[in-house]
Image 1: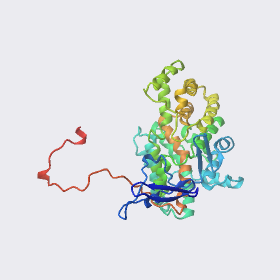
Image 2: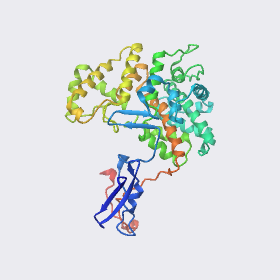
Image 3: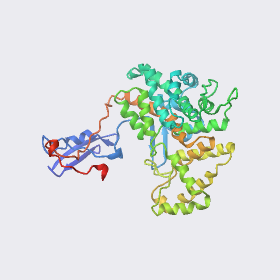
Image 4: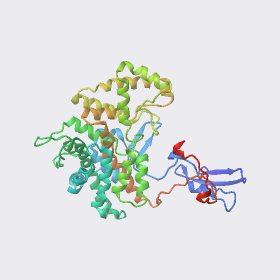
Length: 437
């Protein structure tokens, strides 16, 4: 038997089946060859939550969770965060290479001139209650853009795709800022084409009566770095949704809205808010040991530690920790930072967490930074969605260009009733409903 083949012995029939390896994996459809007879459907794999299933080939993001490695298009995240702007990284993710000077200048100009929203979109936003959650407003408004750009439905047209990508990347910060202003009852601030991507977002968030908003350079750079760190993260929940919805050839606006809906869940995009709640619950540095012992006893969780993929220190967490120091030099030290640092120190020295490979992840420090910069916790997921839109669009574009991809349609293992005879109404016996149990 060659090294590039997996040989399977089916003990039911004593038959063997050879399955060639494909880039280190076997194709799930090859399992269908394993049958007991001609009427057998064949073997399926059962993998709830896709813990060990590759649904696509991708050249965008590489993660080695055991070694704590994250790379975009082959470039270490540390190098990109130190040396690039967010829009430079966006170009890399979307088009495969770092832009040259002319490419970047044209790209920045394009995105900058797509930041304005149609006036009808403003009216749409005004229809929400003042206490509407910003993420729900963001999702709805992104989806509503589909009505303004009906040509986006032609997803097989490369030129149209390129136009919609630019529009979305330009408009999501504006939408995000408007959801924030709406919650405060403030008038919306138009984009300022003289400002860079992060500065312009800050301008639309916080400008009041001053004729020209001046963002603090250190805070603008910190926000840009956070955008880089959140731009893509392989086949996570929201990216899987983007690809799944996109596989039906839905337009990029409704596909992005669907991905953002997945991100809005507390198990995905809301983790940094949960970290802040945990730090508030701890209350002070001298109570950290007590809280850690409480977690070890099986009461509660250590939020911001551990990751589905990373079994080592999340490389983004190191960068965010460095970024936090730059932010606090401007804003003043967030008292929660001392609690967080003590919590990290104790956890990283405790065998309980070491054995379980529970290391700080990207969410552990990001919420503290956002709060120090003036963001309310309900805005955290919206802040996540702005840069992740780039990753979603890169994955969506790759999906449409992959000849192997078809409309997503997972299989199931049916566990319900076999065929049953219909019972007329007068012969049905009353049974307690699930709701009354």
